[in-house]
Length: 429
Ligand code: AMP
Ligand code: GLY
Image (cartoon, rainbow, N blue to C red; front, side, top):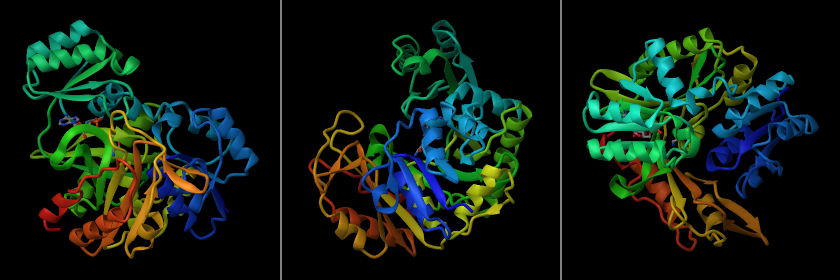
């Protein structure tokens, strides 16, 4: 029996995972490491160092955890799944070797090339001189995309308009080392033109169960202005991914990727996030992530109408039967409420008002990210503070619910985008 589930992480994605798993029949307790003020409503928060894989294994053993679900990429790249699998504990999340699909863009690009997975044309540069040569060759036209090889919290990608901008960005990444060692290698690639959507699956390495799709909004301000962030909102499903497109993505991208990973000795199990560009030539991979998206999880998981735990267990055991998780016919829109100044400097420790009122509204869910409980009050403790999710029979209704929820909440300096999900309304799906 899978009764005791551990969710690793402390964002709104992890609150959504805790919320979804706590509702599964047979689950008696969800543990959240380290969690936040929201996960405490549906799970038991346990204080542990999420980056210390040995400490997490000890926790799994002490608490007799039946299944561990890993939210963020960092513990995966540090070998948390390796550690748990070696000790015989079921885990949802790839080994650190398989997680290189996210943690090394050079590896991911090479894998795609070796196994015929459609993606942007590219070159990997291992020195600043090689990067300058690649840029000056003009082989990719303009704009051109530059990516730090390693993890850079979603900020290691620059779209440069001209040669001067590209050279400056390459210097910033490879010589100034703006993202540290992540910039020891640089991927230079062609800029893809099309519309972006996120495709999610759970896999045991061979078989795949598809989750609802989503689209996110990465820029800080309305109309895609301002700096890139971890994500300021999302909606599900993506009107761009119909049944035919889903099958194309499975056949042309997911299957060859999983086959490639296994044939190279890196069998990939866990959540797989495929960032897609839907181009005139078909779907192409912008990036892979070795985990669910944030804020996409907050709109995808409420859309799942059953079978989540059984799917995760089968993925961890290597016994997954291929399929598609049953999904609601409703639409979901999630608005991220952030601290003033995010994604740069911001203040924390602000009291959050209106949470109970917002959560009590029909068709509204509130997932916490940077929140903490102090003296009986919920306070802000991070840049992205909450995701307020609205559900409706169409995107306009879902947006209205989400923004009703957001309007009920207040904290000093808060801001949120007003146009989340608008592009889905405009596409009339
Ligand atoms: P990544 O960190 O790889 O997800 O990249 C962040 C964002 O940069 C993506 O969501 C895209 O909007 C954009 N991007 C990355 N690669 C490309 C590309 N080859 N062409 C166009 N846009 C890209
Ligand atoms: N929303 C983008 C990500 O989770 O990487």
